[in-house]
Length: 194
Image (cartoon, rainbow, N blue to C red):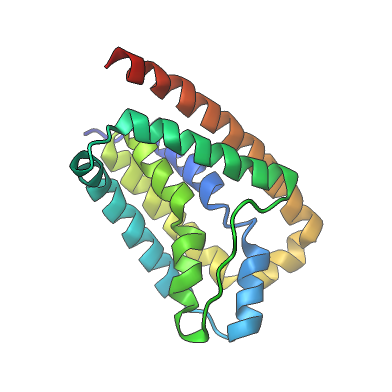
């Protein structure tokens, strides 16, 4: 368990791409319009608590149901692959669920928008390759960034514009696609060795 700057940077970028906070700005703005004030701090903290808890407990939960980390990482690579396709092609593969005003900061903002199936799967996939302490640092860095973006989402959309957000989404989609392929190839070998 040693701190590795390269691992922290890589894990931070992977989580940033999966969480896709910049691409989620239009959704955040829609939520602000529907429900008025969103609790940015609360949403960021809840999302980070969910991610850290899953990072530490996820493996135990998997062991309990008899699934190894390599299998989960391969399954995770498929989720990342489809998330990347959504970002690149501008399509939606999963159904959006309805919400109410009282819980908008927690659901759908903290979960599943920020700490969703993609980011939780990614955390366990990263754990198969990186040191846990470096992943925790990556979660903390992303939480700070999440908070800043949530607080300034309206300003960011005005500065970048809808086209700018679309371009950023597509760029991170391609990065995510490459990560999904790497995750699949590095973990599929582990499955056949067992």
